[in-house]
Length: 495
Ligand SMILES: *Cc1c(COP(=O)(O)O)cnc(C)c1O
Image 1: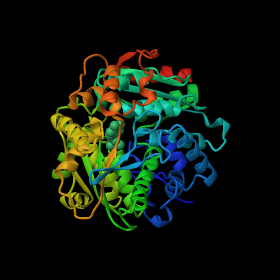
Image 2: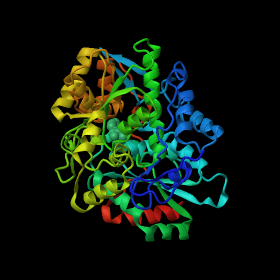
Image 3: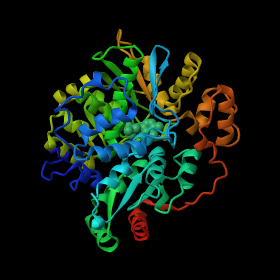
Image 4: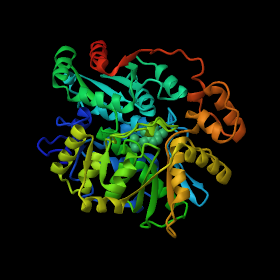
């Protein structure tokens, strides 16, 4: 049980998994990684036929060995219970000659529930019963979905508070209402003037602001932490569904254990797809991981040229959770693909901060491209993909998933290799965009659009979304980016 985590930018301080989760981000601004990843491989045939919860126990034991079996079992039971609409948690369904992995059947109808239902439970284990451990304030910048999923996970969790910042006017009506109506005595939600990257950068600056951190610690006994996918506790639960998807394919008789499978992953902060890479390192036969982007195609540019350049126009698209210029988890991928070259990662990240761009050596790019493919869809292609998927399969997808579906349509199929598209949100979170693509009447509000979508497709609006109509909005603050530290001070004082 000696696995230790350290920063992607240096190897000096070693922390347990619990401490890495509690702290969120390393002191030098890097992300927590462990060099033990993939030292042992999971026996996949032993997972076939197991429940999601049992698979989760095996995978998480490997990734977080400092948690006891009882702790992990309790976290898993509480996180993946009745709040999910499907007993298999992440059901795999056929989609033409491909498959779709539904990750959106949790309490907020977004794939982020998979991680954020369990992260608060992990966090609660990190004090190890120490009553003086103090409180944790989780700070999150959200492009739409993380915010609500984090609020739902952390609301009224003892010893924690949560503050969510979202870019004003850049999330859907449903997404905004999901957040501003959140119940709980320990939650704060605030709109910020700017885009998601502005908010995310400001949150990272707050984490790195030593004076502020000391002030909150001394005054309120509060430590800041993160629920963004930079937190390793947010990342590791996502590894589970890659194993679950694979086993479901085996159980259907589509493959036998050992056969490779491709995954197509709608990508923003690179957390979801990175979890697929972790699964590969743990021995899952992953044939190829395809990064699907929207018009904010900074990752496509990086993976085809080796140059990451955030200095480009920011496009507000119909897939807001993928509207990202700085894809944080790429840093972990660079760390692992360069065999743990923390100096290289440090240099890249310094260049990104100072110049808005960095470049990796061609040999490293070549290695990365053996594992990761990429592509992107503009908004008309997204809309067309929603239409095509409905026409071909009578299956409704949301605009994020549609970026991946578009690539499925474009990519040559490798003979005999099954392809799994990860579906990251319920189409009912974006009823106007989806309705428009399906040629439905989209006059009126989002809730009218939901009702028409349900009627036209014979599907059901998730109850958690339908009940938002007319609900009381508790949070209406709008602030400038520069006022975020003060907002955090006040939220911390109230904890
Ligand atoms: C967050 C999100 C994504 C992107 O996931 P990353 O882990 O940030 O790459 C894609 N689709 C939806 C609906 C999301 O909420």
